[in-house]
Image (cartoon, rainbow, N blue to C red; front, side, top):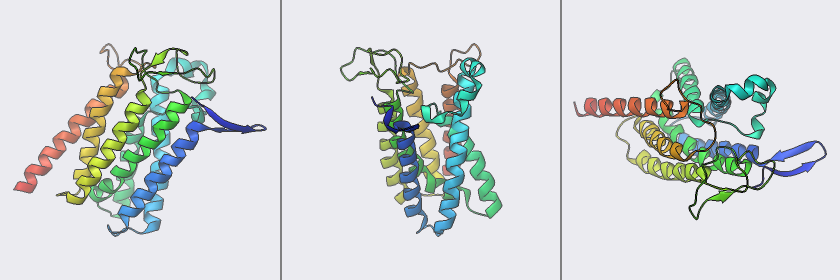
Length: 255
């Protein structure tokens, strides 16, 4: 793959950062498009976009650092080098949810409406951003003999081992993001109550994460003695919570 696009003197354009930025931009445009008919101004959407981007980066990076504490204990300054890759999406989702709940309550907005608005934006944003993971070699898969395995050869790639076909877990995640985006966009038009789109996003995304995690080859960390990675644990919690809330919301609507 191509971790670096080009360098001009001391300045290097990292492919990972480019695609993550592109994902954020496209997601923001989707939210802006959905926000106009929902009665939100351009400034409101942009303000929320800034908060989401900042909290997502911080949350996903913190989760990645927690999953790789042994490395960052020895190299503490490297935890700030996010342009080299290393963001955990579930950590970003948790940070975004907490931050947006605070923002929405402060400004008297509808939590369900805003959550539905941003769910498709997050899905397509991740789908694009994961291409950056592929280029950088992070979030790589286990060795595989499947014909679609990808072999990383660039010595600057974060994938390990090099020159061995690996599961393209970055592509798996990107494709799942596109499928989720299409699914919840169709649901957005026919949603029956506020928050329904967001809950389905959490359910679909968590399910996809649980499946794809089985093919990841990078160090995922182990939660105590459960044999479960932190990402799997968070995905299960989100999946159960979202499914439970969805069931309760549907039951209340029938009443």
